[in-house]
Image (cartoon, rainbow, N blue to C red; front, side):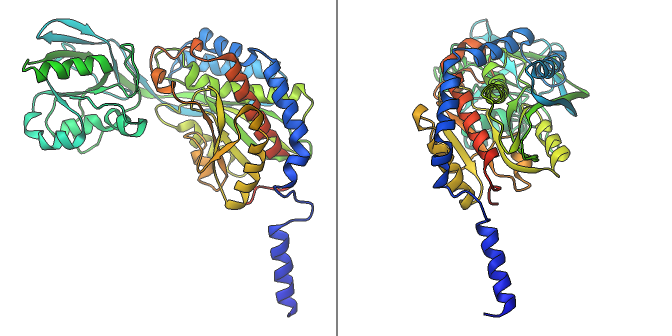
Length: 455
């Protein structure tokens, strides 16, 4: 072996297995007792995290980007994090879009008169002041709309598709106005994206195409979408009046809010975790996503209470503007791209019973994350799925940072998602505490590893 070959071989060995590095097999032996201690302490607190979610939700209500309520919630979070003793608490400025719903209504005109529950979709334009009165045309897919495009001119298109999943059903909310306008419709309605309803319309973001005329776009309940379809199937002509006064204002100033548990040896390296502090302007934004912010924040509080300080810094973040712009995540990437991030973790699926995480990263990093995940088996949260992340951490993950998303029992999530029913009572305090436990265990051990997660 030549001298240059020997040096290259030594260099490769150091890269793959640095001196003192922990192997995945060594993680259980070192951290089982610590993980069990964290889990026990989290579960001994019967409702601490739930109470904080409820306080944030009740005190400020919904928190749409650009609203006074959002900024008040961010200020309160920063103040309370400081009171809790978190390190380096701060707010970082982000300019966000400012859409205002205004007054709105949907009136069934014929074959009988009835006021129908509805929600304008985020970013929609307004109707004329007198509203838009037109016949309704019902379709179950974009393909059906294309096939029947000649019937759509001058009508209000209603997308009535049975629940399949959020990607499929949410597409009618996101893209429905574009397709309907291309066919000549004067407005569009989308059946709310969810598997269950008690006449609760769901809002959410929608899109326009600069090459197509903008038309108003709103959400109706599952029950009313099906009723309108039945009427039309029976040969009745259905006419409605849609009134919306929505408007887009100039961008407003908001903030990402964060606090830390400073690392004991290499504090400049970061494990970041959190959720988004903004919400839609309905309900109280408890499940989506005050819960995600609070469980990350409470995980740090728990570690501090137990006297557990990892090698690296753990940072809890409440990102702003996830719902209708994603600017908080992009601003975080821009402000922190030069820091060394060990791992990014997001909770934005509701804080129901935790099942584990999804992970996106190298094969070598995955083996280490799976070893940590195994320590969560006592509370049934050990599974590490094939991929993970989230809208807020996607920008920093795009720079190469490994990312994870908290996976929970999502069977009821879309019952309440983006509705007036997103309130604290939908969350179980014991399940919330288990979410605190899994976030704390994963963040602590990832931050305490002797080496960086391989990229």
